[in-house]
Amino acid sequence: MASNEEILAGLAEIVNEETGLAADAVELDKSFTEDLDIDSISMMTIVVNAEEKFGVRIPDEEVKNLKTVGDAVNFIANAQA
Amino acid sequence: MARKVVITGLGATTPIGGDVPTMWKNALKGVSGAHTLEDEWVAKYDLPVHFAARCSTPALDVLTRVEAKRMDPSTQFGVIAAREAWADAGITDIDHDRLAVAFATGIGGVWTLLDAWDTLKEKGPRRVLPMTVPMLMPNGVAAAVSLDLGARAGAHTPVSACASGTEALHLGLDLIRSGKADVVMCGGAEAAIHPMPLAAFSSMQALSRRNDDPEHASRPYDIDRDGFVMGEGAGALVLEAEEHALARGARIYGELAGTSVTADAYHITAPDPEGLGATRALKAAMFDGRIQAEDVVHVNAHATSTPVGDKPEYTALRAALGTHVDNVAVSATKSQMGHLLGASGAVEAVLTVLAVYERQAPLTINLENQDPEIPLDVVTSARSLPAGDIVALSNSFGFGGHNAVIAVRSV
Image (cartoon, rainbow over all chains, first blue to last red; front, side, top):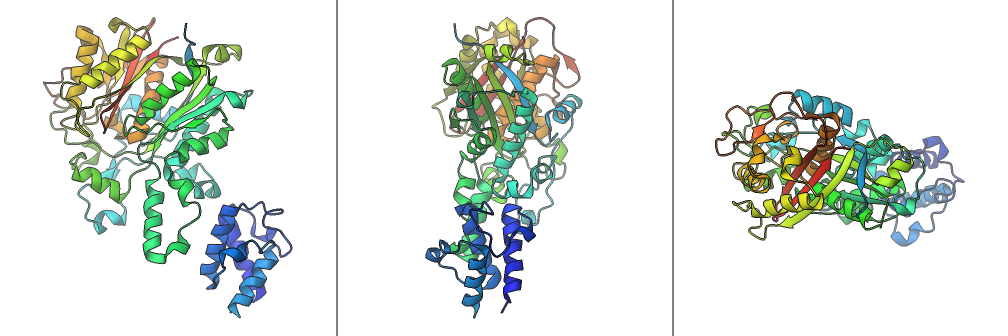
């Protein structure tokens, strides 16, 4: 079970790997599309990598609700609980 | 009078140089890009062929990690070559609606396709990456180059096996002559040094098995040739309407004077032993460029080093050029860099353009005992091409009976 800080750090690492964005730019209040300029294909790659890293399942219909990094961290934390 | 089309930019990444200056220097020196493969999969699958000619500069030394992640290796090579050609052309002001792409591949994203299949079997469908389709599609390289340059007058992908790269130039010439574009980024890219294509080409007896001596395995016209050597890489050429190039004061390497494409309709893989389709292609390219046999001083031959392939090309050259063929300096550059499949025609076009521009023919290596049935004047040591107006031809032939020829005239 990862803490929210650990999930954020792990997610930032995945985003960096996929997009080249600096990991410290990945903050809780940042929007994936508006602030981080992540397109839908990159988003799906990030989701699948996050599923593997955190051992959770993020259903496709849930992905559109993950607007900010914080949304994703909360979803993963709840899914792990 | 058709619009004249000139070549104003060159790019390449190959087994004998990661850019055009390095490739050209080595092509005149005569080096081999073939080496033993150190990959674990050679032993794992007990492949009958243990060597290939890899690009001398890995794509990841040139592209950023994030750029490379979204491209199949074939597209990575294509984008690298296209960027070099574009910078070389020095075009700073262009109507992007008049800029097209004709970028070929023989196979396309074979690494992406097979990696995704492995992932599906090992980890399930959820792990198959969403970028898989755009990375494996054969038009992926043309699309990536179009995106990179902002080329909006169409992004085309001629596919005709090992004639693909040359066919891209044929299409590019047509696009400019017909007024559909003013500038076309042409080229070819391939990255198929993967165990499956190596196994498949081996099973059809197309590859050399000289495992103990890779550097001497590619030996076109030699009596002991036993197959081609798999290469990889890309070549790119900027074609430009002459008036467009003159208006911006561009450096012009040469004129793409004529091109042609024919089909053997003889056999799915074997070349027509009489070389009839190749002869028609040579004659058609010369007719297209208003070229007489006597104008031709140099040929970059297809010459893959297979026992059955090299001779029909000679037959075709003699049929098209007559006795003048004895006066033509013939280079078989696959002896140095192996066979780049769908990229070979594009890379050889770059070499042909440079031969005309620099008046030097690239070398053929590994020719120790020339096949007496192929009495061509093969360039095996430094050879200057004559001054004055000259023409060079480059041939490419592909499985499926595809024949493509380009003719480059000095300016």
